Amino acid sequence: MVEKQITNQSNLKDFRVDVTRRMLLYKFALDEISTKVNILQEEFQLIHEYNPIEHINTRVKSPESILKKLNKKNLPLSLQSIQENIYDIAGIRIICSFVSDIYRISKMIQSQEDIEVIQIKDYIKAPKPNGYQSLHIIMKIPVFMTYGEEHVYVEMQIRTIAMDFWASLEHKIYYNYNKKIPNYLTDELKEAAEAAAHLDRKMENLNTEITRLKKANFKGEEAIGEQTDTERLLFNEIEKVTGYMVNNNN
Image 1 (cartoon, rainbow, N blue to C red):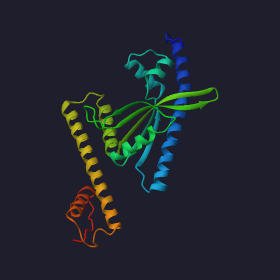
Image 2 (cartoon, helix red, strand yellow):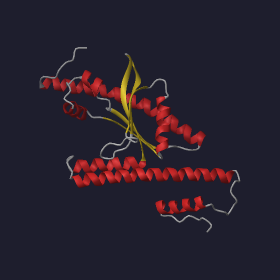
Image 3 (cartoon, rainbow, N blue to C red):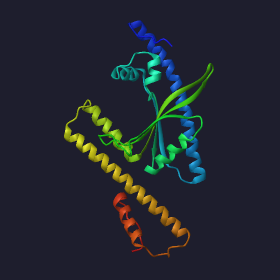
């Protein structure tokens, strides 16, 4: 394909029209991946009686945002350039309860035969310098049109509630400061990210221990009315985190 450069205002107008049409493909790709995630969500809820997915968000970048990204990366203004270099035009974000759920969902998505995984960026094991954490998966999704099959890039972000809360507020802060904030605030943001990560670890530990206790009680391994030291510590942590008094039979 010969790459057509945009050289005048008329070409720019035509280019915007072409990009808008291309947006339909990205929308359809999001419809495909959303269906897959919704199926997993229903199966978890109805069969496994546990749903690790809190909620799902999708978005398609606007033509204006795409043009800005091309300019920022100093890439040619063409449809070919967009298709080959910008992977996050179609985006889906999955918010999970716990960090272990992130990798669980990721494994299930990657195992589907019609999904081609292009790249994985694990900002949980290796957070960004500002403290940002999330798991990013760049994939190609098949979209079937009247003229044939197209494979469309989709970026999936999977994160916990705490990670999403931090990222949302961090974005607002940077927007208000026009992406130029004092160093001391940058340090504060990183500390907040570390606090969010600590909360994730603590809540995961609490969930693991509660699950263990439920299984133990179900099997009759614990005497009714008696508490172990671990249980007492667990109830104390729940009260600290939630602010609710737990009836621990003391």
